[in-house]
Structure formats: C-alpha cells, structure tokens
Amino acid sequence: MDNWLEGLEPIVDHQDLKVPYRYSMGAITSKFFIEIRDHKKILGIKCPQCNVVFVPPRSTCGRCFSLLKEWVEVSNRGTLQTYTVVHYPTPVQPVPPPLIYGIIKLDGADTGLAHLISETDYERLSIGMRVEAVFKEERAGNMLDIKYFKSI
Amino acid sequence: MSEKGGSLLLAEFDAKFPYDYSAGRYASYFLKQLKDHKRIMGIRCPKCQKVFVPPRPACGYCFVRNTEWVDMGDEGTLWGYTIVQFPFLDPMTGVERPIPYGYGFIELKGATTRLQHFVTAADLNKLRIGMRMKAVFREERKGNLADILYFKAIEE
Image 1 (tube, each protein chain N blue to C red):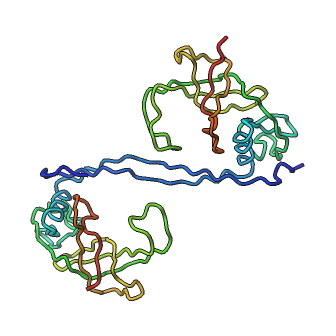
Image 2: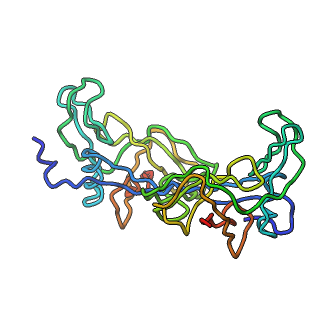
Image 3: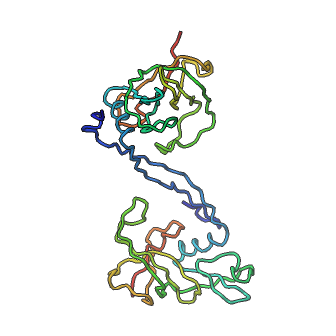
C-alpha cells in the first residue's frame, strides 16, 4: 500500500530570506562610532548624578534617568568580565567558529561592552583577564571597526 | 555604510536568514513528481473521498491516513485572486517580485482543496473568478513549489 515510499528521497529545500535594513544610530551612538572610525578613540558617557560611565554610550541613565551629555574617553584596554566560546557554526556569525564572545569592561568605564575576543587561545581564557582593542585598518563607522579584543 | 563627514550615521545592511525546509514524506513525493514528471499530485481520503492538493498525511475531516495518490493534471479553475501592486520581498528568494502580478487560489480538476499560486493572463486585468487555468512549469525544475511558475488563464 505504501510502495510510493520506496526509494523516496526526503527533500530539503534551501531558502534565503533576506531583509534589507536601515538603522539610524542617533546622535549618541553616531558620535561613539565616528570617534572610533576617525581617531580610534573609545568614548563613554558619564551620568552627572550617579557618576556611572556607560560604554557603549546612551542618552539617558538607566538608573536615575538623568540626561547624559558628558563625554569621557576610556582606555582601549580593559578586563574580561565574562565570555563564551562558540563551536557551533551558523551562517550568520561574523567570523567562523571557534569564536569567542566576551564582555569587556574598559578601564575608565563602569559597564561592559560585548565584543569578539581573538588572537587568544580559548583554553587559556579566564575572567579578569586583560584585553586590548584591535582596530580595523579600513573603518566604516560601525561596531566591527573594532575587529576584536586580544589578550595582553 | 555611513555618510562620511556627517554627524549622524546610518547603517544599511541585509539581515540574512538562510533556511532549510524539510518537506517530509508526503511533500517530498509531491515535489519529486513535480520535478521529474511535471505532475501535480493530490491525495485522496479512503473514507470520505476528499482529494487534498497539496497533499497531507491525514484527512482533516475523518482523521484517517491518506494513502491514494491522484494525478490531478495541470488544469483547474480560478477560485479567488488578488492583483498585487505593492512590492515586497519574496521569502523564498529574498528578492522583490516585479509588480503587478496575480496571486490566487486554483481548484484543480477533481480536487477538494485549492492550491495557492501566482496567477496570470494575457491581460492581467481580465482575470475573473471561475476562469480555467493551466499550470506553466519551470524548464529547470528543482523540486520546490516554484517548479510551477504560475497558472495562466486559458484563452477561450
């Protein structure tokens, strides 16, 4: 009765959904990326009331709702707060696995910045490890103008 | 990526969602017949005799397993349609289909259910419900529903 199943190869159809996307970064994030692009400088923004320095910068303090206007330069070196090592490949990753995502608290900042960690043996990763930003040669004004952070 | 010299940045990119659709046994058979023989297959419920196109493993009316494949031929009746004037991305390909185009429900001869597909006519404005339609197949068929390019109105 079910002989139609004999020799039937299951079909897997590959499809590529693409969604074109325009992201307006706004004044604060634009300045952050322009400084990285033009001067390889990483800026944070300081809350006038609770003195927290946010990196990446934001327009309001999430703790006291103050408007943030005071730009401060932070170091391109910092401390690894946490990380994960990705071995599983997916077509949407920025670089092929194994790749490391880390959260880096830059010297002078009070918040962590999520970015890639490279030039680092992933078996030697540790929380508290010192890392440094590696900038791209050709910078375009986006997050990947910092190529990754590497261990010092 | 951004306006050089300006103080506001705009990021433009394509978010990509590559996608593998596992068709399963029934749809695999359906697509294989379509690809190899340009046959549009339906499946008949052994109990109520309803014929489902596209095929499904179980009859939704009597909850019994469908087993009898039926070659539906390539002609049917236009059951409902719309003319699309607003361009948007085709999720199968990630590109916009040129407008205007027709999209409709086709009731293949002998089928209980209707198949959704692109519909066209020599003059798109002359599409009418009840028109007889014929499937136009892709030359190089790949085993997906786009192996049927569209259903075209038969000129009387």
